[in-house]
Length: 110
Image (cartoon, rainbow, N blue to C red; front, side, top):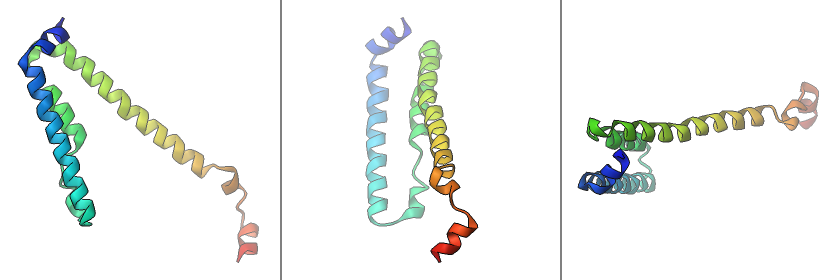
């Protein structure tokens, strides 16, 4: 019921239209910094996750159940990504080719 109520309010379209424009602006800033090779300036750009969570967090407490659901859905993606990244690194480290590299094999390559 809270989601339906939020959807019919102007608050919904206002919050997330504003979020969309902020995210687009961040992407433009990132592209400009990358094109100009200003790598240290990239660190000063706010994190996308902070903006997204901030938008959800700024909703009134009346929509507490919708906010809980949004946080759960948003954190699933982040934790899955971290897990997949860790397994990918482990697979690279423990590959068959790497396990065959011994001192004797390396000396024969030199």
